[in-house]
Amino acid sequence: MSKRRKNDTQGLNRLLGIDKAIHEPARLMIIATLSVVESADFIFLMNQTGLTQGNLSFHLSKLEESGYVAIKKRFIGKRPHTMLSITDKGRQTLKEYLSTMKNLVDSLASS
Amino acid sequence: MEQLDIKTLEKKAFRSFFKDGIYDLFWGLILLSFGLPLIFQEFGWIDYVTITMPLLIPLILNVSALLFFIFGKKYITVPRLGIAHFGKTRKRKLKHVKLLLAVSVLIGAIVFFLSLFKVFPVGGTSGIPLPFLIFGIQSLLILSFIAYFMDFTRLYLYAFLFAISLPLTFWLKRNTELHYPSLWVFTFTTVPVLVIGCVVFIQFLTRFPIRKELRVGNEQTKEK
Image (cartoon, rainbow over all chains, first blue to last red; front, side, top):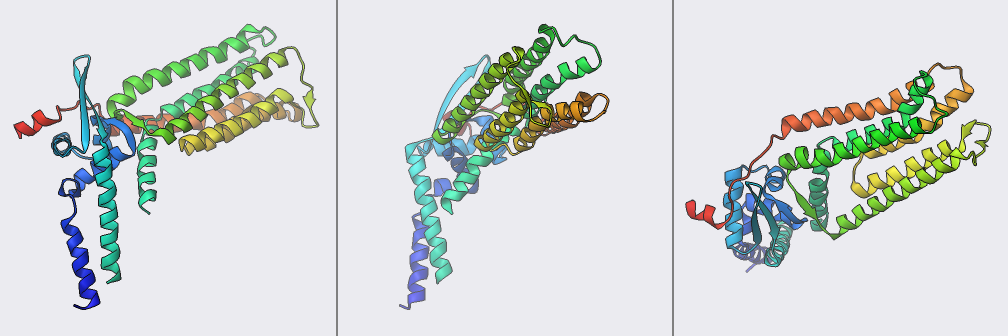
């Protein structure tokens, strides 16, 4: 196998290791935003990501299911208020994802 | 590179809270509080010799600015922009800001009370009283540091306008025959801050409507 082809295969194999739960652009945006704050509420996240309420709510549910985001719900008066934060697992996954993507891009660029 | 992007993202998220114009209006009102007693005195509306009026006007305006800031953030900004708690680095920087503000108020109070007892001589050939020179230098330094710690770029401009306001007023009073120097100086320093604040505030109100959140989490997933 030539060196170039070997590099390509290694690069493509790394794609299989990518966590699909955060590879989706909207979810990546959510988790990246949560990684720079200790916690934030739903409205802050909506403004930062530019996602609609329904979209954000759906993606947050997916991230919660994966254990990457912690959701705390409470009521302020009669209004629901949701605080969100990234979990340790989520932070680790984001770090690994960024590292994998960087390596992948580097290996494809050098081949 | 990876670190840089995260830093940029954090900065962008933090700076989004300056989109409301409330900080600008707050600093504009504080600056106005220094100018109004002088302007009123020039027009003969207050007797500057008595201690109550020069103290009362800044006090009322400062308290109004503070109340506007607190209630504006609570009832105008938060329902539109939401809430975020930032990390340790940002909290440390905000502690620095609080400390600087406390030092600034303390220096201001000491200089003000010392000036009442006429402790300070008139400074050099410029004719600017020393308390006002101290005010200028202190404003420039403290507000610039606050701008740096908070990543609030517009505050550098306000620091400059604060710094020139009182010293320039007294320099004009002593060295020129300009009528109403306080009015001129404070119009050119305060109005830009308040106008920027109003424009940013109105833009904020039109761009960010009040939002109510949906239920999020697992029960939402089940519905879908």
